[in-house]
Length: 222
Image (cartoon, rainbow, N blue to C red; front, side):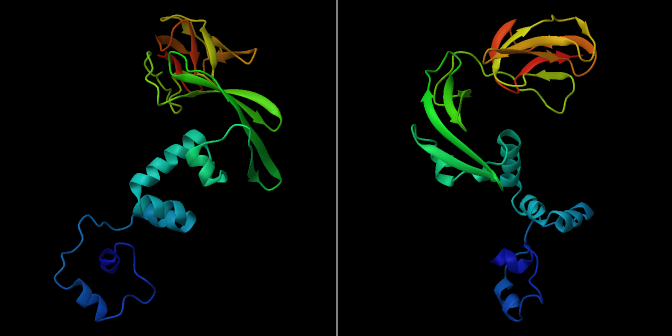
């Protein structure tokens, strides 16, 4: 409340009544680290006020929220209980993605962990069985975690989804944009992974044949 009276959260319409404000702040030091709004902040408040206020008032949680949204998408469509405590086998769950679009899903089974701490989770999505590979964080893995690709770096070639990747190149090879650098097999289907830009294979981030997750780094171009 004192911070509010200091103006840290802005001023209410018409300002604070006097002498209430002066008496409440008497003898109190001025707040530290309070800076004025930039032109970008003002533009953000008019265009996307909620996101801008979150960033200005709660920078740490706002950054974590954006990172979560980038990795998992909009999970606000899930019920809080299901999000925090997980799904129970044999129970059908309903999620309304948008008007007229409903997702029905059910947890069928959870497999045993492998040497990397990965489990295969069998889920039923709108009547179709789908295996999903997830990392069990409660298990100490014998193998180190895979390196993640930087999606903003065109020199990073990432796995498009979970599966078994077989590299088709070696360090030092020159490749053209669109050339196949690896293949990935999942759910009895095989797809090619191509180089987004031309360059030289600077580094191989995985073994010749390896199980990976979507977004894992495979090859670095130089």
